[in-house]
Image (tube, rainbow, N blue to C red):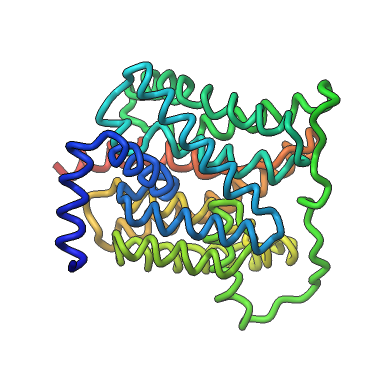
Length: 322
């Protein structure tokens, strides 16, 4: 069976077979983390998350992400929310990130798993609410439900003795110098950090998942990660943070969003995207300072804020061009 015939057969199955339709939605949920409405991309992303979690010695991260995706999409289906959005995995990608983040930042326990399931279910309703609010400005909610719910859990930990922060998630690298030869592996690590994976192999797998759906987006992704590293180095960012890809992943998401939503791909658009990358790096640095007293990570908030600003600007630019 050729790849094309398998694809056609799969498309037929998801129209007539509910379990296959659910599997397709679960995979698209993984794909939507990087704005790829493609089940094959999602499958490759899932493999990358599983491999990345085993690489760091925490296989429960991969399993938790899958459970979170299943819970969120089941909840959205039961409450008969926007069916087209459900089919595209829109209700599952924030849950996917929640399933990755909570086991990453918290110590493993039965209470943690109950928290993952609860937060995943809540993310569905938060996604629906935020989408309703933001549609007035034609803006997607992006990863805001993931950010708010993860922050909520992390900020609540001091008040609940059954949850404990995982100290091993704190940066351990003691790198004080940077070699230009490190830029390529570090940029790939920045792609991996979109899924909170500290694994270069996972980053390569995620790039493969992107390339399956869009080679153009893949190229932009690599360039944006390299550019974010360059900007952070130029302005004296902490070398250990740069080397872990932590200045790159938000820039990567901003770039993918702008490339996806910008109709024209000319010189002005490229400059526009570069400025968005620069602003994302500075926003990340600023939010890191603001959130440091609360001991919570910035997650993907820089990407969300800059993407909203740039998408609003893009609406005006499109009107001018018309």
